[in-house]
Image (tube, rainbow, N blue to C red; front, top):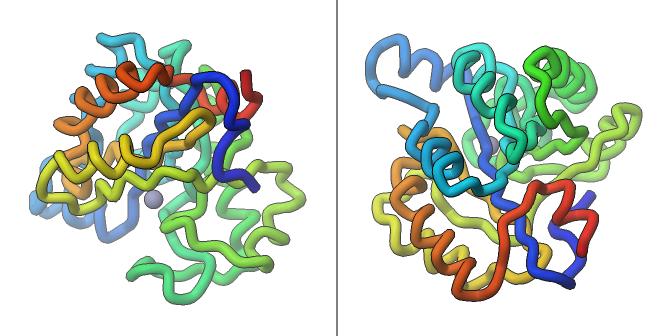
Amino acid sequence: MVDHGPRTGARVALTFDADMTDGMLASLRAGRVKSYANLRIIDLLEREQVPATFFLTGKWVKRYPDVTRRIAGNPRFELANHTYGHAAFTADCYDLPRLPVNELAGDVAKTFEVIAPYGGRQTRYFRFPGLCHDAAALDALAPLGVTVVDGDVVSGDPFATAWKPLVRAVLDHVRPGSVVIMHVTEANAAMTDEALPHILAGLRERGLVAAPLSEVLAGG
Ligand SMILES: [Zn+2]
């Protein structure tokens, strides 16, 4: 289990979670929201050739196969696992629906199976929904050989109503080896694409360089 890489060098990891629950799918179907795939984030990262790592839920991949293909097709992007349907595996994890811990390994294995056919830079990194985990949840994952990645810089982008606080939250805490947590879920994180150019500029001012998560965790 890791929160960040070695505090040497200049690399930091920008990570984007792609949550998807049955409730979110219902909102899409009913037209209550337009999209949970923020293409402006991907456009910007591609245009500026910025590496990033995407923690994908199985249900998001199934809803957005074309976007997943685009992510997998970028050699600067890594793909990681964020459960199948963004359920919690501990009690009191925000308002997320809960799955019993004995279903965790199967859920995570199924998610890898959904992501794997897309190829690209596949990893064995895993992030718990809401970062909620305990000893039992970690034990349950041991047979899968995953690295659980929380992150040390929380942007606070879910349900944000202004972009400036996100920029401040990231730039006030980021340092070499940091793993920054953001979301690519648009309707649930509507300010992230507006904050991102300012975050990238702030990283440059601080002499920090975005890198794929595997390279940040390896250090150097
Ligand atoms: Zn999440």
